[in-house]
Image (tube, rainbow, N blue to C red; front, side, top):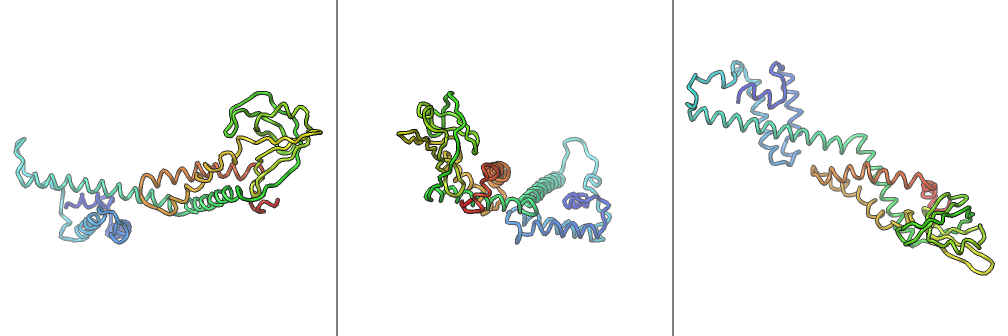
Length: 286
């Protein structure tokens, strides 16, 4: 191994001092030591690092130069066996250096995801998403709230919903705009005052009760978090997987970013609309 190869292996300039060489060796050895890095390639790279440092710090190797300078002149195609072996060794060494650099870059990227402020934020995303998933699951079995509101108006345009085939948009005085099961004929003759049946923890509207002088009508809401409850429960459990299985794999990176940016955004939308933060913190009593 030539001094130039040693410097390339350590990722240092050729004029580095002994102090800089020792410092860089300790830095790389901490990442590639077999007791810390389970990668099978780490053991061989760790040994090569030791050889490189030994050569650079040994005075007997101060005059070592690149093998290209010591090769005798020859005609094209007259490569000797020793030179071929040396060329293969250098090529293998460069390949090992490239793999080591890739391993270092992967380790650095993995550490950037699983340490520091970013990992702290991810843990908050994971915990809050678990709380939301649990809340969506258990409120299916909890009693309902009944809240008063006023039906201000409705649209005659029909749309396709998630739960019902035909739905209309309505305007409530307190709650705003919602989509509900089509029941326009009944609304024409009912009183504007309505009763909303909502879930216990997140106060998600499930049904709207309207009345006239003789009858009571129940209309189901559509396009709300309750209509996709089971999909949301599963989605909000996804951040738990990267947290429990921190491995340098493509699936980890994909699920990590999906959880951090995608599910994190969904979680914020759920919490910051319809006063759900207050409802959740008060366990549904407010």
